[in-house]
Figure 1 (tube, one colour):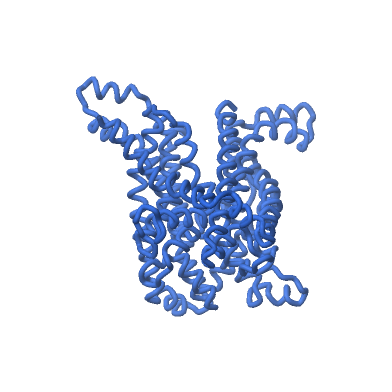
Figure 2: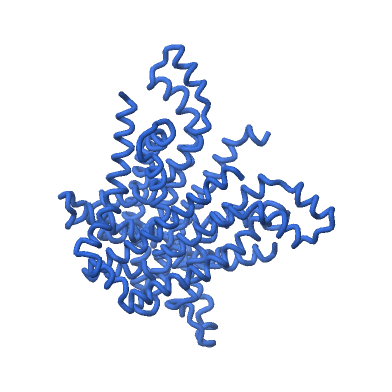
Length: 263
Length: 253
């Protein structure tokens, strides 16, 4: 008896909170056929938003992947001054409000910010432009690769690396031939999470971008602007594109998961 | 290794230093005036209250969902297990929009929570859904069934078995999931911004209040409330770290 009650409770909670709303947005998008939805996501502004979103992710993901691996190696394998601080700072972006992140970068790079004068004198615009949007996206998606790689590095230990070094391998050879193959699935998982976060970031980008249509508007910002302009088909269609990216992310993640288990 | 420290300092530490500096610029009185502003207090209060409610609901519902994913067998279980992660992958603005489509003024079910505190609760429940499920699930999976069988053979019913055998084992995982959900709920912005209507003194959460202050050109006020949020987040992170060390204390001995 209690089995059925629990099953009913759990599934209806997921249904009411998750499946029904997401399902409805898909239905609303294609309510009047495929045409209007396609038109909404292929306007010049929509195409620009998509390109910008992908461009930001294309810069952020490699940067955070390289940093993530180096940082994980530092945390697990080395002792250095400030290690405790590094360990604490890496997790912080996970718990920090994206609006606060955006504000912090404004205070550094806007005209009245710490580097405002210097940047203005040199004609560099960071805030309300691409560089600021890249910086905040790096911030919010920073922890994912580190957090995935650190436990794997701990688990594999250092014996094989030491063996390689004893046999005359250089540090780089040891990394490429011994360490990297062992952590590659963890890196892959971290990359997927980083990508999902950078494609979907909203709050921090909203603060530093200035929402300039056709210029600094990413897909998530466009969804909000269209919704507030009562362009529901456009907002829903943009949401569906982002939701499909999210579902794609989940599929790739489930590909990585079983590999992790048999590692 | 200097590279890692430099990257972190540049990306994380420097902006936060600017934030704290801005909040402290007006001295103690300026900071206090900013955070004791009635609208700020109201936003912080709402954020904390709703986040606590979100934690309680997540603790119960998250454990139930984890339970049916591990101990139950039904058709479509794999799909259910996969969609639990959707709130992690779905952009927050899309999360808010989907909830508004179903539970907003034009929703097909006749339930309209838009611009109410219930809407804030709903949005935060959506984005924090996976935390408790994903921390409890692996623990439940590894839990030895023999203890429960022993309790059953001694005549304990399902409720008694859950209370005295299963629950004590799950408790650290539930707590850790709840803490993660709390940290997330405190700072949530994207999912709340469309559905809550951002009415000051009614549905305005802390992040939206900070956003409003930035837009209206009051960075000091925004920074002061941000520092309060920052301290709460940092406290929660430290708590999770301590909890993790405490629960794994036997493994490391």
